[in-house]
Every structure is written in C-alpha cells, then in structure tokens.
Length: 354
Image (cartoon, helix red, strand yellow):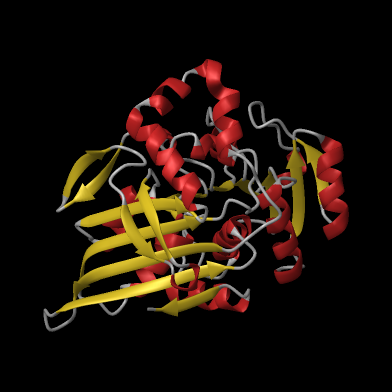
C-alpha cells in the first residue's frame, strides 16, 4: 500500500516547483515533501504549498524513518542510481523522469537484477515525462495496427529550462538506435533533417535526436518505425547547431575542456514560451486500409509545465484506485491515454488534429 506522502526529490527546481504547485491544487490531501540539496531552497518552495522541507543529496540519499511507504519522485539526475537503490532497498514506490535512453536502459537492468520488488517502479523519462508517448497511444486508439510514429518537437529558445536539462541537450549529437521496419538501426544525432509543419508556428527544420520514446513505443504500440526529431523556433539556431554537428566541430566541442562553451550554447533559458509537439501516426484500420492521424500538442506555459503535468499524471496514477502491483513499468505505458488527454485539456494544454 502506497502512503499519501509524496517526496519530490528536486522539488525546488524549475519542474519540481511546478509539480508541487499542481499537486497542492489538485490533490490537497497529500502530504508533500520537498527534498533539495539545500534545505533553505526546499523551504522556500514548501512554505508556499503547506509542504514539509528536507535536505537530501541525490548521490547520498537518506529518508527519515517516519516516511515509510512514501512515494519517491526523482526530479533530478540520479546519475549513479543511488536514489533508485534507496527506493528499492526500502520498498518505496518510485517514479523517475530524468533519464535519457542509455541511463533508462541501465536503470531497467538494475531493477530487473534486483529480485523481488515490494512496490511499483515507474520510469517515465520519455519526452515530457511520457506525454508524447501517451498522446501517440491516444492517436492510435482506433488503429488496428500501427506502422509508423513520428514525433517532431519545436523547442522555444525563450522557454524556461532547468539546469538538469543541459545534460540531456548535451547529447544532441550522440549516436543512438531507432526502430526501422522492425529492426534496430544506428542513427546520428542532429542529422537527417526534414521539415515539420507546426501549424500557426510555421514550418521548421527538425533533426533526429535521442529520446526514450524511440525505444519504448515499438514495444508498447507494435510500431515498426518510430522516429523523433527536434528543432528550435529560432531557425538560425537550428541551422547553426546542425552545421556544427555536420562539420565535426561539435565533436571537438564535446571534449571536457569545452563544457562551459557547450552549455553557453545549449542552456540559455528565458521567461517561458509555447512548447509544441507534432505527432504523426500511420497504420491500418480494422478493414486493413491505410490510415493516418496527426495531433498537435501545444502548452502555452512551456516545456517545464508540460513535463510537470506528465509527472503529476504518473503520481496520480500510482495513488489512484487502479494502481499497479509491485513491478517495473514504463510511464508512457501506464496511464490511460484518453484520461491523459482530458487532464491535459483541463490544464489548458491545446490538443488538436490536423
């Protein structure tokens, strides 16, 4: 049985503070705990929501004994799986939304090798804490079979972003694998571009990048092809980064001595802007005829807010009447996609079909 105590590790960050605000409004009966490396920072968020503040270092996490059965939510990079192992060893339910594909696979192996679990472990690090995957599932609900899923992302230069996002964005040019005609194919990051139509935001060039959706959606939906691409609303910024990768300059800049230079290029958060996702699903209907559906997702409050909503949906699912038994799960496979769509719309996220 999962208690009504929710520990937000990294709850004072850009995404974490929004998760706390959403839960305080949507689920006021919960006991919220804001955990941060610095206690005074945690307290500044906790006081706004009637929450408890504790100090916690994710690399050496300790949880007070009176939090038995609490749901732990990882909102900071758990690079060495220390927070994950704390949850496993003490039997806490656990949600993590911070892992890129390689680290997600490492976590899956770690949990699979742990033995019998005493609580559910949900790894929901797909784009926007699983929102893109959930909307792909929702779009394909009427399909008899899914053949291809394309996820195109328009990232606003002036959008908010937490410092942990730098590690994710820093991997834009790293090679990775996607599913093509049922086979795993190695790809190169920020190459192989195409033009995506983001409606009122116009047409933008987008390029391949690594996101866990490309590994999980083939298994969840049966799709033989899943591709994700990203571009920036500043076309010059997209073109510059593509040139840096294609020319090999980015490979040189990837050396540790240029860490600050790369971060200066990749991490320049602003006050906030629309975050846009275009999801195209192709397949066949019940009569074997080709069919296609394209859905646009627009969050006027930006990518951190959309991520926070994804986290809240996962938390509410684990605390709800249909919570899964102990085991390991992918977040984008857990929540009912139709329910997710309704909840997003209730929070003023725009969802519309092309």
